[in-house]
Length: 135
Image 1 (cartoon, rainbow, N blue to C red):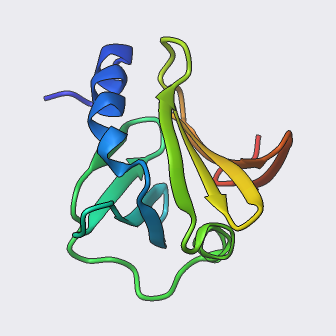
Image 2 (image 1 turned 180 degrees about the horizontal axis):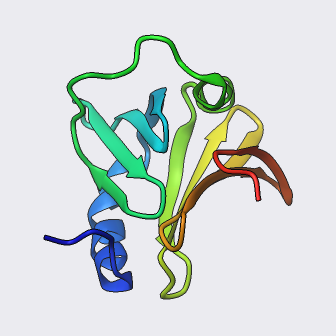
């Protein structure tokens, strides 16, 4: 069984996630190093983007979500509530997936690092506004 994603895996997943473009982020959940973004894709339904720092990033429905959001999940909710996904891409051939989103006049990038210890970073322009694991 695989324990992490390769660059080829990320390339295939990013191609699959193109169906999320135009969808809206509904809510964010967090449990330790796991972050779940609930997305309403175009055409209806729900999708859950599951990330585990440095290991996984996939569409996966999580049955038991934490009831009380930690500070990072609250920050994600504040920044990304009802944000529209404008693009999903892989940076070069690295194990980095970038979701570009816009909410009103604001645009952000959600950056998932899938190497080493991994990280989830939200960037507005050139400024980091949220980071799961500050380094």
